[in-house]
Length: 603
Ligand SMILES: Cc1cc2nc3c(=O)[nH]c(=O)nc-3n(C[C@H](O)[C@H](O)[C@H](O)COP(=O)(O)OP(=O)(O)OC[C@H]3O[C@@H](n4cnc5c(N)ncnc54)[C@H](O)[C@@H]3O)c2cc1C
Image (cartoon, rainbow, N blue to C red; front, side, top):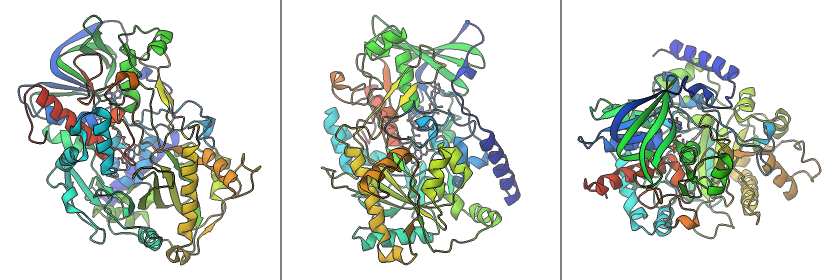
């Protein structure tokens, strides 16, 4: 590809993003008539070819005598534009996006249009890895020991899941200045993991500031996540490598694997008497199909649509399904423990640093060599995971991300800011650095519910962030804000004369500017969804305590049906979930193999 060709792709994407209109439903997938076409049967039918679906399809089709069908609503993404991480935000305002938003919120996202948080998800093989920031992060080792306890299954403990993380990974150290604990990394796996190079000025400053505050500089995927780092990314030579590309495309010619794109699943057919999943209904090009599953249906449609499909199929909270008019097959608290992390991206700090002036041509030339600003999303640089005073265990509950960026209309459109809030938060900043404050272990939770019994209505997403009655999540975020001001006082940061120049936000003028009450108001206005949603169908040992799947990821009370995506995460893993979802998918495939006597050495 040439620089000019890339420029053309950027031009087209800019036009698309500027004219993008958020869809309000999925009616474009509706069939034109009532006819149902029988498609025969497959051993395994996987719903959703996203992060988890791609990994599971790849691993199950290793068994030649099993035939595997993947049903994915989107397409296979071929555009090279998708690989340019520097333009990630544009992808959310494109046809790749499902276009979901939350219902109006009362405790967060108040500074955004209609008090809603955007709930970005991608459609297509590779799922949301087609539009995410490609940060590779596994969370704290003790998270998985807790999962082992919650599920009563020691095979979820860190000792047992670490080999699965490593199995997926092909780690390449590109930045030798950063610490790496080799024994925690894998090589030779399908997913390339590397760092952006060269390390930029803001990243170096951020690391130095944290050193001066007494933080360790760590490999956050090593023995502890706590400390400051630069991001590890699942890119290959600076380009996005989506999870389909890494795991499934290389084996997509397998004769026992069929991938049907543009296929929108509307329901899993479950025999009400035997409570056994029989097959899957879906629409494709205006027609309705039914395909039987000989062995199992595996649901990997993501954190919003996995619970939606379960509920449409009669598995969900009895009261809710009755209200909607759906026959209840199994009464489970599907969609009742949705978890999302509040992220405040509005702490802009004025500096006197001189930003490198690079033309687009220069950036693109660097990109073609696999280096430079366009090889990382959202202009981010350093990252730090910390424990607030409120964290009782040893988890990180605050993540800081430094980003060097400019005020932009696109930013307003991407996040859905109310313009006056965005302008006030920026104040008269120049040469700004944003330090994002992210509560990665919140207590509040929300819900996913059905709007109606129609599969073509979007689900109702209620994040309900920062709503816990004790006010814990607010206190953690406020501590995060205070620590940003501590960072500004370090000699490293003082060298660039940092100043906070935001103006009082509309709606917060009643509070004394920069007082604790002001920051609380500021946070409710400016915190939005981090897109790290999880837990809508958590695994556990007891369905009466809200668990939807057991430790083998089987839906309680229903035979031949598993869920194996971000929905099953029973607790936060303090950070960016994709690496963990890949691990969950690896584990699901191993479990299925072992259930049918194809034991795997890692199991
Ligand atoms: C903007 C953004 C940035 C992010 N950045 C990062 C990051 O840097 N690092 C990180 O670790 N995580 C990041 N994430 C989160 C991460 O991408 C998701 O958590 C992850 O992709 C979820 O994986 P999944 O398998 O559960 O679902 P998905 O990857 O979303 O896959 C679900 C698939 O199911 C398909 N599907 C849904 N419904 C149907 C249906 N009815 N019929 C057929 N197919 C259907 C979808 O089209 C999709 O392909 C980010 C997310 C977003 C939105």
